[in-house]
Image 1 (cartoon, one colour):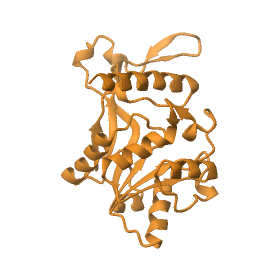
Image 2 (tube, one colour):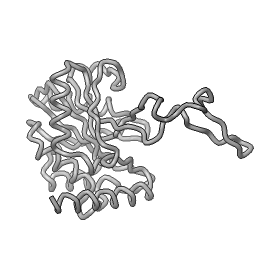
Image 3 (cartoon, helix red, strand yellow):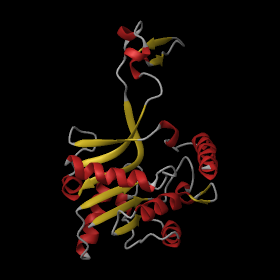
Length: 233
């Protein structure tokens, strides 16, 4: 059995009510729920939340909310893995035994059904513990600089000052969209960023962290542009 868990706590600080704030005409969480349902990957799509309003919106969008998340797993310091563990164990107690579980973030409006399918295929093909979305950095991280206390700058890796960008190894970062994993890996608390994981590479134009109002505005511009492009195909 395959399970999608969409974590969506109610205590967002920088963008209040972020999980259900309207984004390009829909509650933010609706984009993730719809992608999960349209992918055909899952036997069950649930939302893990501590918030009754979020639970109501999630149900209206087609997801199941079979339990409310306990307060001790809904603070600012709770990581993803404990939330997924709790969901697995609660559903197991109700007779639903998952073998593969995908954590799909509620604030991932660029996630596509096809990417979720690729994630599952990668997990199964490679025999990895996890398969998750990544994208490349737009600029070589080896040439990154920091701002010093006196207003100056210095390189993190000064040895690369004279290196050409095309000669430096390409680097990737977590795209913050989805994390497929074996139930055994989730329950054991294995690290997601490890040699036992595989990457599902996404293009940079479909990846945007949404942590600030500026991020939100940029994400809406990007999303509208992508939707306009699709309408021309």
